[in-house]
Length: 242
Image 1: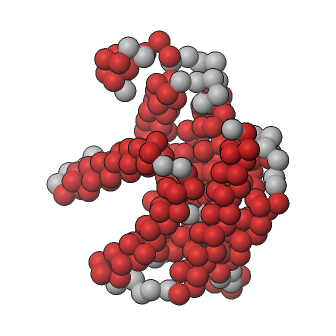
Image 2: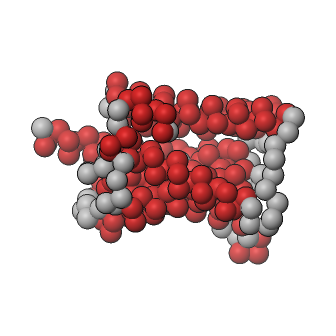
Image 3: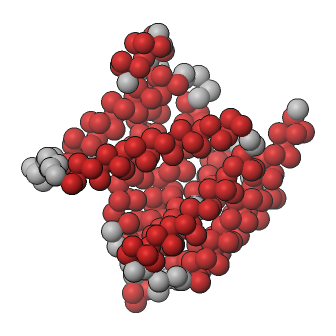
């Protein structure tokens, strides 16, 4: 990050004026990542991806409290549809409570918190400053949590390849979604993100012997339509402003 900022001449952008909000944003994002890795070990990939897709619903619900944005009728409808979808996927059963499902749901909530904090930061913080504190803070959080039990794991062998794959995959995903949003409206791009669900269902079936679950597909469709309603409302609002 320092090398990038040095070559691009943007190191001057780094400041501490919103350090508290930077910390909240990175704590939420770091929690999201760790909860995701916890959930992926215990629940089917399709279920995890479907629950993760509920993030826009949490953003719509929490935005009035954190961003002072009014919750309009379309957004209320999208929240209702989204929660119905989540309930169909989770199938709440007190007698057989699954902590990994709660981790997946909390994962989406944490990511929503990270997104809202990021939106507030972009009002007066430049990209190098945001990425600098993201890198530094999450590096520190990673060291603290990995050394919590006094067992800082040093990777070896094939594990290095898997971690490299995760890192490159995450980096390319961020690049692709950012580029897509620069070329097309969010109302076009975001629904395409739901293509991950059928793709990951196929991967889960072929690689991990996970069965197709129709309730996950149906619940994901509810979440998809909820997100689409919310995006349509944002597009209409943007057109009125312009």
